[in-house]
Image (cartoon, rainbow, N blue to C red; front, side, top):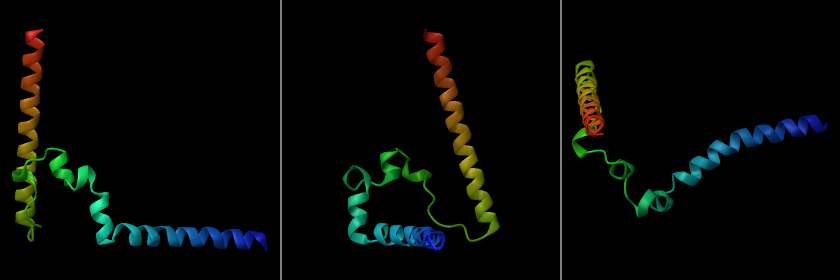
Length: 93
């Protein structure tokens, strides 16, 4: 009988943990307390420029492809900029 009770306890934990965490973290009054740096959004804290944020959800495949291409170009530009700055720092030393 203890095996059944143990399994029911595990089942209760498996079910109640996600439900409890959703209840806890989806309360609006708690959201302000959980934000980092006293309410600073994470993208501002990490230094992501506002022009690189996705403005809306792409509705068509063409919009999604355009967004992907823009993200790839921005990534390549950042890689090129970091590579050139690292080469400059190596040549200085």
